[in-house]
Image (cartoon, rainbow, N blue to C red; front, side, top):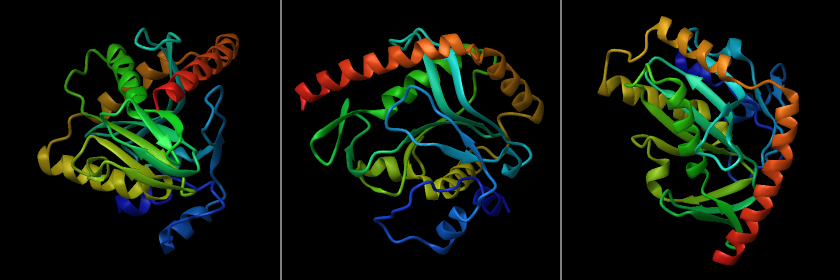
Amino acid sequence: MLSKILKKFFENNSSTCQDATTEADDNNRENKNLETSQRIGKPGEYNFNIHPDQLPAEFRYIKDILISNSNIKSGYSQIDQVVITPYAIFIIEIKNNSGTINGDKNREIWSVNDKLPMTNPFNQNDCHIEGIKSILEKWDKIQYVSMVSFNKSCTLKVNEELRKIQSNDLVVYDTEFSEFVTRKINVLKHQNPEPILSNNDIEDIYNKLMSANIKDMQIRGMLVDKLENLNNIETTSNERNL
């Protein structure tokens, strides 16, 4: 049942596909009633579609959350998606690169088509998770799963561990996200049959994060320029290191 619900979770925005798609993938792209999440200031990302009502009742979902974070150069973490479940909190970074993605969890610089530099997205997520932890200090036993989602117009050539469901650092295609979430939760259930978070915990965490979410458009607007400047500096530095 969970798998069926989650299969409606995402709609693929990509019009081309380098890998063979499944019938489930095709059905997933046919869902036209999902809302669009508009991203700001983060080049290389794509609009992400989701309808919260399609999540299991005990899950909570937050999109495009901006929080203060001293671990980030800009002073803020802009997190694409947070999914709060009874067994873990999923922190998801969305990428829209085209081509072949080469990377390893322990490599600071990844590459696109073996030449274009790309900052390790898990380093971004690790900082995001630290920012979330600083807000959720009360819940010190939370399991965090870091996920990086690419669209199907790219080919993933990443370390095998990043594709194994036992890992808490996962790279997925957007069309298989629901499958990986379902499988990961099943693994966590097997490891710990009792949920880590109660329904009340989930609701309290959701409210805590929503209270920390910066909605001020002036701050968000200033962040756009800051992120673009940092991205340009970082790209130049990465190109020198390749």
